[in-house]
Length: 285
Ligand code: GUN
Image (tube, rainbow, N blue to C red; front, side, top):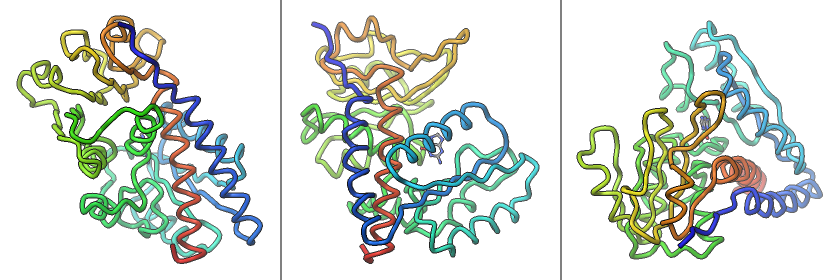
């Protein structure tokens, strides 16, 4: 058996096409969706993710601006910038690229963003809504994974979804999205005992670890399972995911490649969230 590829590039292109149409429609009514991003410091991975986000926004008719601050910026300066973006009627979506450099209180920064401009879906109001089953502005990577599974007709209801990650950016919102779709969900993390024993019971396995020493191998996989790889690590100048693709793809039913799997879906969902935020702000939802 060879796993079918969950082609994130292809599905992201379809999502972007729909989002471009929505953006055009908004434009005809005088609203140009506008995304503001903020980067603090010079983490090269963050720089490259942000470039991809701005390139994609431009491609589909979403206006964007970038605020690049030095790592020595004070917390209150960053908060002041967010205050200005919150009140600027031209700006519909605000994204603060994470992680922030050491010394910043990340939670308090995220809470500064007005919830209806929070296109990352990280504000406790949006995270709480999602946990309560209301999906309004949902974090982009989890949203992208669910879209990818839906596109390929991977069943979720009644299935066992195992997620290796418990962050507010990926694991927790994804667990809620799966719960909202009637999956049975297990969230694993660095303290989980007998990881392979748990992952071998997964119908859907999502791994988002991103460490050089961590790898998902065939012993972690139930034959026929769907495997989504969110990990991204640079090893010897080459990018690789969490999953040993060559070996695991022989066992899996469906599998995402790295690159070209989850990454493009994250970007497409950010654009979708930006248009959604613009809609909320122009029509009150
Ligand atoms: N860092 C890695 N992924 C993301 C993301 O989706 N949003 C933000 N803000 N930071 C990230």
